[in-house]
Length: 112
Length: 114
Image 1 (cartoon, rainbow over the protein chains, first blue to last red):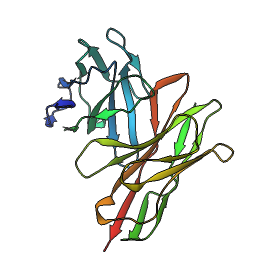
Image 2 (image 1 turned 90 degrees about the vertical axis):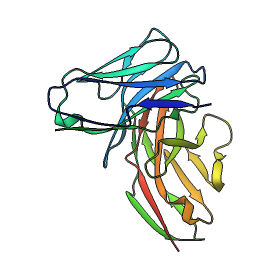
Image 3 (image 1 turned 30 degrees about the vertical axis):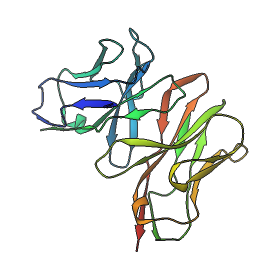
Image 4 (image 1 turned 90 degrees about the horizontal axis):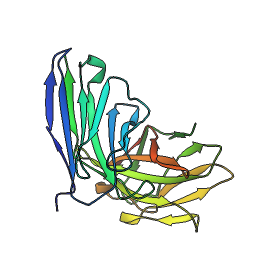
């Protein structure tokens, strides 16, 4: 039982490059989330998906797009990376909204 | 909009001493409350949550928290800490009518010294 997996673990990009962060869960959860974690700012919600086929903006959606590919997978895309997007990105999932969120190990992204 | 304030960014404490990590929230509607812990280089994991019922909530690893509606607080306590409790602790809140939007505080780094 892998829980929530994220790829890649680390990534270095140059300004303007694009990339997709992948997330998958094997717990049959309905809701999935993308957060970014920056020093002194806690975790901030980028986008979430309450069910397959739906996505909604969180606190800091600008510069990102998401796709809920199926019930298991939720990807985050940076179309044109900027240094301000240097952060640690966490994917999480929960059975439904108010239940426990289970987090992946994170992706450390550096944009030069 | 709701918000969460964790009043202490760092809390140093000696092993076997009690600890309290403070959390206050702001919301005009009813909320659900959570405490998550993050060990170094890992994702977050749930310590405990308050959805309804008893205002004293017990979680994993001997932690507990008390929901105080009048003071809009949800402070986390442990009567005797261990070295292994060294981690970052996050308080979070969601609105009862939109439970998918979890708002986190900025975190409190608990450092336990021998």
